[in-house]
Length: 301
Image 1 (cartoon, one colour):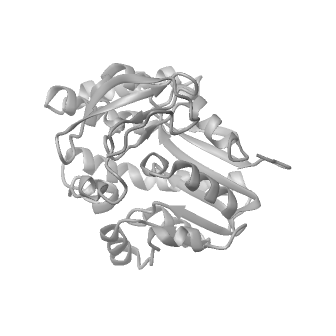
Image 2 (cartoon, rainbow, N blue to C red):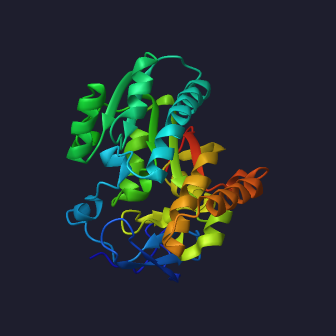
Image 3 (tube, rainbow, N blue to C red):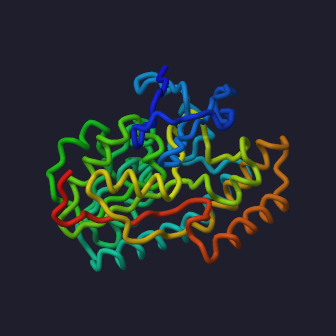
């Protein structure tokens, strides 16, 4: 069990308890969420060590590993995914200014995004720690994803784009991971990090039942400020923040179920749209945010 006495992001010791959230996916255990008063990073306290957390991913309901379409919410996820995959591809192409290049997808899951990029002509490399997900990627898309340890064997300065779609919140060694992303980026490469945003309106609605806390699998809970502080400390700068509009509805549907014990799709949809409306002119309030980052020129730590 890992107990934090200082912030895992900025190292400040001014940390305190915020709420207790339940693992609704696997164990039904409760975990504390704490917050750093300095950088506003939230984090799950008393988490399992890296070699012991695997059991908390062992569920057919964990869609990024199983690719399941069972159930109403998962079926909606699959219907929306085709559109979001195309949007992500266009974002990568527009931001990098390239139609083809070298892309690394970290935490590739069952390979849907990497397959999309491969079909578009990109030289595609994928890292996925979960063996079940790697087998699924091979079965679905004939993709040979690499296991986690291969991340540190890749050639520095190789990739025009590196993507982490809802991955960074799962990584035990946060700073080592971010530093490795910077090393692997080409000089003009772009880093895309998508994470939930606990400063969103849908978190305010559901609070401890907010599905994007997803304890204990989500080790960290980012705000725009905490992400800026993290990336800057590794010589990276945020160039833009992009909203993930569908996430608010998807998260609200799960949250409604966690909070009330029933799906209530109409209520969840309304709450998701309220969240989006509040974020319409301020993307720092969106349920999930894509941070687009690049290397800081002449950076010295």
